[in-house]
Length: 235
Image (cartoon, rainbow, N blue to C red):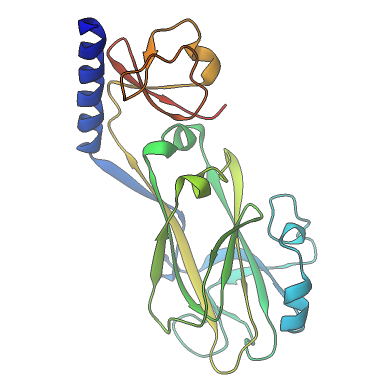
């Protein structure tokens, strides 16, 4: 019992050490601050058509982009800081897709990383991550930016390799624009941390953070094994 408590204490010290470690922020998708960004986009006829379009048909990873326009964002209908490509927002809705890549290292550190989506919009954007609904807003925020941090449920939608962050915007009166970016902030120093897959924990002395022995943990999370903090990732 004493040995087990000692292991758990050492593991918790490792977690505290990790929380104090330096972090690195990487832009997965740049905003206009770094200049124009590549994308593909598609103009619909009206908001009624937008309401009928299924997200799986345009926002997912395996979408045929041959009929889309390959271009550069941000998009706007006015001569303003957001106008790189023209979008007649008062005439038609907009569908837009951007690709980004996650490495195996990104995925391994995902549980301890912060993923943040930042956007300036007009109007009524609905964001999708790999075809699944991510974030819906109403109205517009003028030239300001708003951010949202991914929850564990949002992170679970990410894949190693190619990912798609897509957004739809409605037709509306007045101005219209879209600019958005995505960042990942992860710990630089993971000394004392180990990332394992479920099959690699068989026949090992593994404990959860409540001190309970777990013979074969399958849920992603943080565990203690022989005094070492381990991160159990998804297979």
